[in-house]
Every structure is written in structure tokens, then in C-alpha cells.
Length: 248
Image (cartoon, rainbow, N blue to C red; front, side):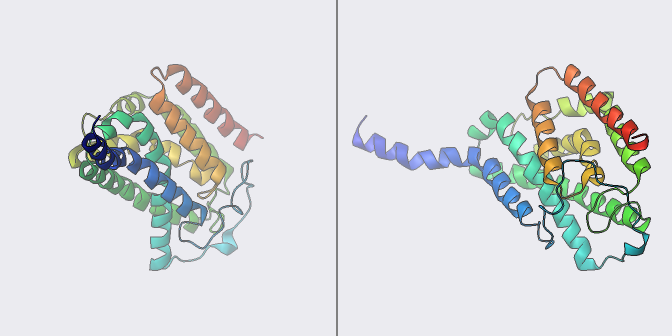
């Protein structure tokens, strides 16, 4: 290799690595933001626990949301979802990003992020409704109702075995990076993992243990060739936990 060839390789190497690095860098930055409280001023460490949160009455703690607080909650949900989802995408679609350009990768990630923004708005709206009905702790953001926790756990467990879950998860494969593929891919990801993400209402919206656990579940689903045994095991775990919530 001549000196000219070496210089050309050095100049093109960062550009070749950047599309691959984008989802990982974005995930790392988002995780760092989440660890600081996602702009809410709350401590994720104080809201993290291994066990299921206690069922406690919070009727006297229910407060009205301001517009700024609603935006904070949307931002919290959005950054949590993207921090969790970008890592599996980067690993599972590594070759797709490697053969792409920086612009195409950015367009894809922006389009994919938009779909999860819609989910974040819906999740924040559901959070507001659950708080108004005193089913969710307004500060710890976890269910204070055993019946609500059981319903969310059982629902996610049953959904794990449905045809819609299987179809949308199978559709989470990319042929190319574009805005259209990002929107379709994002829609399928939300339909595939949405019921699992609603489990944050059980364990706490900023509970790092649940964030790590759900991230690993999504990663396993993306990497396994045959998910049937995984689905059966996860479904049994979720449904069993739901029964335990009601009959501890």
C-alpha cells in the first residue's frame, strides 16, 4: 500500500464507522440523560428497587399537571424508550448501518424517534389518567393498585403469545435505511413491545432495574432466531407474577 492509499484509508475510515456508531452513541447519550432524571429533577436511584412497589393509598397526593410538567413527562418517556431501543437496533442491524451513509442513518433514527414520540405522548396521557384516578403514585410513578399491576402483567404475558406480537416482531427487520422504513419499523416496534413498556407503570417509570430488564428482553427478542420457548417462558413469568400481585 502506498502512502497515498494509506492517507485515503485514514480519511474514509471515520466516515465509514460513523453510521455504525450513531445508534450506539445516541443510546449512550440518552442513557446518560436518563440517569440524571430525564430533565424531571427526580433521582432515578431513589426510584429504583428490585421488588415490586408497595400498594399504598395516595388519594391525598393527587395533583393537577401543569403544561410544563406534562412536557417533562413526555420527554421522560421518549428518552427512556429511545435509550432502550437504540441499542438493540444498533446490534441487530449492524451490517445495515455499516453499508449506509451518515445522512441515511440520521434520517432513519429521526423517523424512528418520531414514532416513539407518539408513544411517549400516549404513555404520558395514560400516566395522567392513572394518577387522576389514584391508581398511580404521582411521585414514584408506580402502580398502587394490585389489580392494575396484575392486569398490566397478565396483559403483557398473554400478548406475548398472540399472532400480532409474532407478526410485528418478525416485521422488525430492515431492508434499507430511509424515512419510510423508519416509520414502518417504528410502528412495528411499538406494536411489538408496547405492552411490555407499559409495565413501567407496575415497577416505576424511572426504575433502572425495570429499564435494564426490559432492554434485555427486547435485545433477546431481536437476536433469537426462534422465540417460541422464550415467549412461553416470559408469558408464564408475567402471568404468574400477576397472580402473585393479587394473591401474594
